[in-house]
Image 1 (cartoon, rainbow, N blue to C red):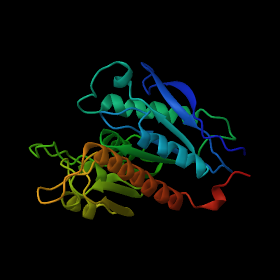
Image 2: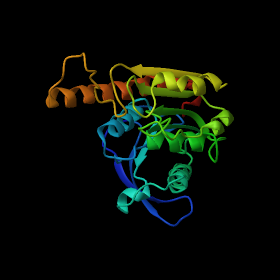
Image 3: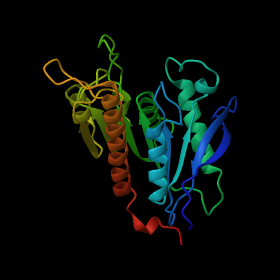
Length: 251
């Protein structure tokens, strides 16, 4: 297959059919597997974010179909739904879009990767409406509580997970650090991995403690970019291991 990392703009219906969603579809850049990746953006980002682009392009280079898309609140200039029901329905719409492919493209293995809000949606889907379809879910900066720690999110439904899970967290994430994740992490009975990015915050920006040398704004931005790229590489290496079952290669 000729390598082509340029994604194809697509539109598809939400799960309930009430909204038209905008996406970017990455075709496999080498011999295709029967795997697909859905990329779910964070609350203050869109499908165009560099992290999402790296994930889509990287998955395509692994031979997977990848789809990154905007939740409907982005195009409507609104805020996410309080309980994420609308965003979950949008994800179901993206899944239905992949399932509508013809026999030669239709994926048999599905992976989800989400950042922050997208991580919450992915976890909800993998332990709920898409539980029987998801083969692995990666959560980048999964929020455990609000920034002031006054409100902890309920993740008891994750006990229903049946697929492998990857967590990628900043060591200094004010929405939940690796130590705070440990009780949830220990309670999961599925294969699980935790990767920590040192000195990084919720969006993998460098967080400098009072006793540490300060970084100028340009250096901070450059380090955040490196941290985000590192997070994407962690996910892609994990994804390659998950989808290494060669009998799923298309003939």
